[in-house]
View 1 (cartoon, protein in one colour):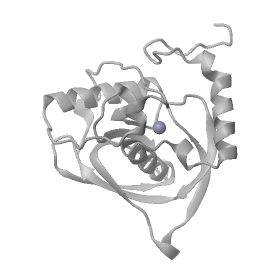
View 2 (view 1 turned 180 degrees about the vertical axis):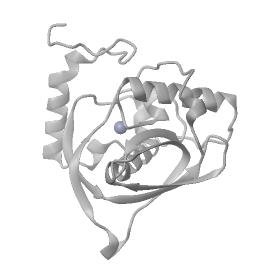
View 3 (view 1 turned 180 degrees about the horizontal axis):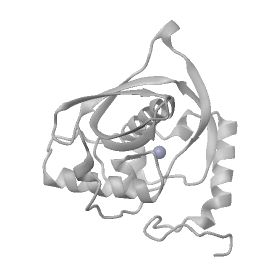
View 4 (view 1 turned 90 degrees about the vertical axis):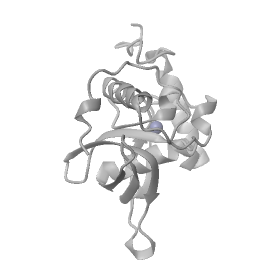
Length: 196
Ligand code: ZN
């Protein structure tokens, strides 16, 4: 499915932060695939683009609904773009499973990154913007993105998957950068200097 029609006409939204309850609660399934959903998808694509993310879950614009958008390179550096409603992630089992450790970040804890090992291949199934079945095969960064965004819709943030030591490092890094991100970011843009 092409998502071209959702790439224009969106309204920029504030990005929610870790600690806000919508980020830590399992979302409701999408059951209506009409104009209201399509407006939300447009807003999500614009908000992801402006904040330079590779994926964005509905909870990150404050909506308690199970969908995410992505615009993310795969292992071949080919950009993949789309929307998945009601996503389910399948990961390889046993000997097929290969973990890759890479820096991971989240627009809802902006600026902070820590390494996290995840399977380097993921298949995400769900529905598109019209309720039709969709399957996304993820490799490279896209595999990580599909897992990260589906986690969001189950109320899990990647900090929940870190050791206590790395989680503390992540939070102290985020605190050090917090002055750059206004509370309503990206509605108010990021500061470009420490005192700006
Ligand atoms: Zn995130």
